Image (cartoon, rainbow, N blue to C red; front, side, top):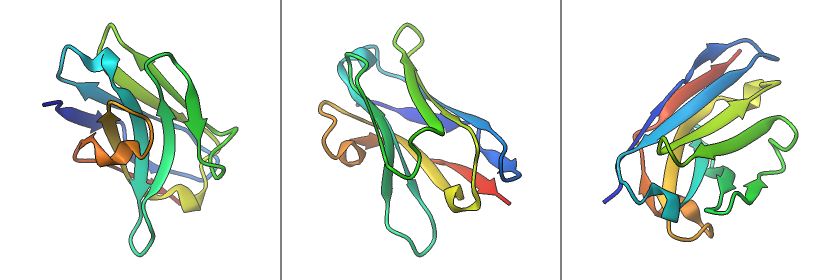
Length: 118
């Protein structure tokens, strides 16, 4: 079982930046594809970014060029650097871990961290 704890959310003005972190509890963290997805009220879940065990990344079109996903396997931590934030980025952000990157949000998930852009 993998436990995930997100942090780093908050309120920011449009154009600002935030960095989300996700700490994982399991020592085999480096065998999992990791990713971030978000959920806003009244909207469908959106897979934001994922990073494979080899460092290969994928991004939603809506965040390409603005968000960067990274992982530090030594620290069992996943990051999401968010720049040039827009109001439409407002959502609850969750990190997830799955053995494969396909539909990574179906794997283990954290409790989420709120991001509000005004």
